[in-house]
Length: 137
Image (cartoon, one colour):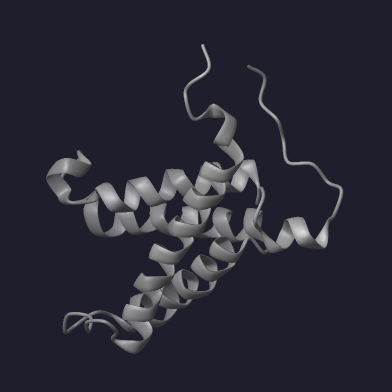
């Protein structure tokens, strides 16, 4: 049975891609520019500059829908690494080790990587006539 919102699937996906990218780039802005709040003291430079750069650039590309597949694949990998570096050693379950956000980003970006840019993206503007994938009912 088709859901109530299934006719808006492409638009819902575009909004999810946009806001996931936007929220992710906010983490990069925080790491690199200390806005809207600074990082805690003692954060290693590879986290600040390495992860921060991936978050800022990757989040921006995902949000805009430009090179989305690659950007989402790289950010998904970054979140997998972040989970196992920062959260996994504390406890196995994300609820216990406070890694839910890393897991959610990891799998959301993996899905975006597999799905592609969709509508309302720069990739779609650069490849006119290329239809986004349709799912059977």
